[in-house]
Length: 469
View 1 (cartoon, rainbow, N blue to C red):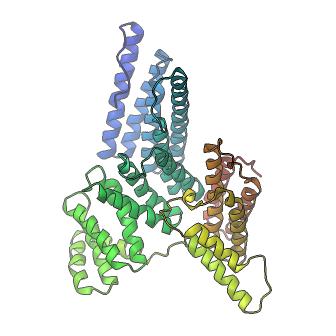
View 2 (view 1 turned 90 degrees about the horizontal axis):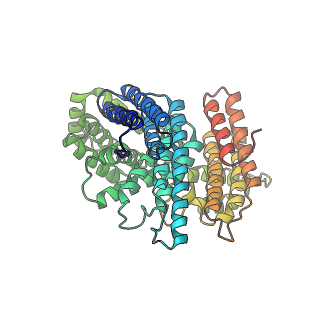
View 3 (view 1 turned 135 degrees about the horizontal axis):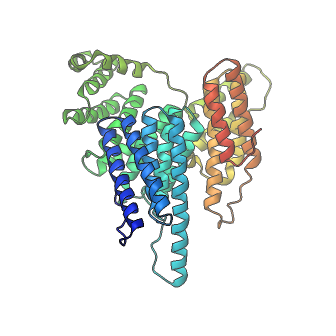
C-alpha cells in the first residue's frame, strides 16, 4: 500500500522518510505474518508500524497521508485483534479507523462541493472514503458477532451493505459486484451467528450467485465464497431438508478442496453426513470413509452442525406468537392486547415480498410505517416473554431495535425528502423497554447471555441517540 510520496531533501525529510520506511516494512510484515506466523505476530508488527506513524506525525504533523495510513493500519489491527480473541481491542481500533475515514468522507465531500461551485466536472455517487468506512463497519460487525452482541453486529452489517448499495455495487452488471458478493458472504456468517437464519440464507445464496455470475471462484474469493457463504447455505438448506440444494453447494466446497484451496476432509464429511441424513447411505459411505482417513473429528463436527437447533427467524417468531394467540382465543380466552390478524399483517409486511432482504433496511417497505411496526413488535415481544418463549422474544425485540436504527439512518440520508420526518422516539423507547425486560429475565435466570445483551443495549441507546437509564 503506497500512500506516501517522496518530498524535498531536508533533515526533517530524512526523519520522515525513515519513519515512512519503517512503517511500510512493519505494515507489510504484519500482513505477511497473518498468513504464516499468525495474528499475534501480526499485531506485534502492526504495533511497530503504529510507532513509526507516531514518529512521522511528530516530524511532519501536517503530512496529509498520515490519517489514511493510520486508518488502514487500525483496520488491519482490528482483524488481527479479533483473530486472537481480543474483541475489545478490535472494536476500539475499528472505532478509531471509522472516525478517520469519516473525516476523509467530509473532506472529500467538501472538495467536491467546492469543485461544483467552480463549475468543475465532478464524478457522481459516493466519495471514495464511503467504501472504506463500509469495510471498517463490516469488520467491526464480525467482531461484535464474536462478542455475541446482535444489535451492534447487525447494525454495522446493515450500514456496510448500505454503503456499497449507494456505490452501485448491487446494481446489475456493476463492476463492484465482487464487493457485493464479499459483503454478503460475511453477512451470511454474521446473520447466522447473531441474527436471522432466513436472512443468513438469502445473503449466502445471493453471494454465491454473484460469484458464479462472475465465472470461476478465484483465489481471492475463496475465503469469502467457500469460507463464509457456502457453509452457511449448505447448513441451512440441509436443515430445511432441501437436499439437492445443499449437496449442490457441498459440491462447490469439494471442488475447491480438490484444487487444494480448502481442506478435503471437511468437505467429504459434509457431503457424507448430508447424504446419510438424506437416506442415501450407499453414496455417503465413500465420502465418510475419505473424511475418516483425514480426521474423524470432521465427521463429528458436521454431525453437530446438522443437529444444532437454530434460533427462530423473525418470521418463525411472529408465526409462533400468532398461533399462540389464535389457540388462546379458540379455547375461549378473552381477547387480549394482541390480535392474531395484527401479528399476521406484521409478519407478511416484514418477512415476505419480492426482492432479497439482507438486513433490517431491506425489511422496510414504507419508512413511515416503522413506528407502528416497532410498537407492535414490542407488544409481541412482551407477550413472548410472558409465555417463556425467550429465543422468539429476543429475535422480535432486537429486530424492533434494528428497524428503528435503519429508519433513523434513512431519515438522516434523506433530509431533502419532505416525507423524511418520521416520529421514532416513542417507538424506540417501547423497543428498548421490551429489550430491557428480556435482559432482566435472563439475568434473573442466571443466563450468561445477559451480560453481552446489556452491553448491546447500551450501544443501541447511543446509536439511537437516547440517554441511558
